[in-house]
Length: 369
Image (cartoon, rainbow, N blue to C red):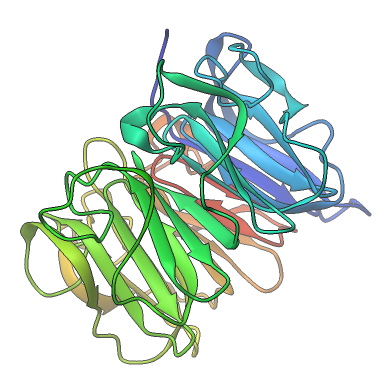
């Protein structure tokens, strides 16, 4: 089975001259059995309206439209969830049970969905138990399978080989590998084959996952983090191999959105959008993804000198994205494999596209709508 790790950017937005929404993509991605590269935004057929959520995976992408889930890109590990092990450059519907779905997510080579009733589903590669479906024979789960005991889910996020679930009652469950403490279950805990509740987290309203670390935000705007900390990703003012249980990050004001990134050679960085519109960042900065003009990693949150008011942010592998209230998408950091869609690496925000309404980034790639 051929596996590749890529950086890809997908954009979903309203162009200045179009009367309807349009999904676009650029960067490196996978489809039709080969690695592809798109250096500038390109429309994706079939997503001209009605998309309510997007999630860009390792080399495939998911979209929620009309209460159903669609996928395209690499499918050799069952990531497309259509019962086949074939890639597709065109969107295909994920073979979920009948009914409507309200949320989607992804992890390394796998996809996730939550039904309108709160039941979680997963499909794709069985990397380090990150599908959360218990002991299994074989390496691929397809078509989608119900996650045992996950009946009250509202949000799902995946990192490299672990997954976080947010429940209706504001608690959090995790599954997958715990080699760097990214499950938040303590230093002695091993991998979790099915979701396990993270102790001490209540009142949570948002979750995020980087490559080997995790975060949760409560209704008061407080941020809690756990997992790998070699680049200061946990934001405590120092570095260590891991922080295996949630710790609070000291931020000067309440946070309204949190996003974690990373790739497979460096764990990642964090972007936190505050109530006043200031973006704070910390963690890995070797590619300028924190836009502060210096490359040392940041072990505590710093206010990023972006000079632009963003309504949402997204941390990817070696770069970052920001979306303004007027729909402009900006990127900064490394343009490796065309990931920024700008043709060059820049440590200050560069305009990529306009007319978008949402953005999303994962451990290795990004998306916006």
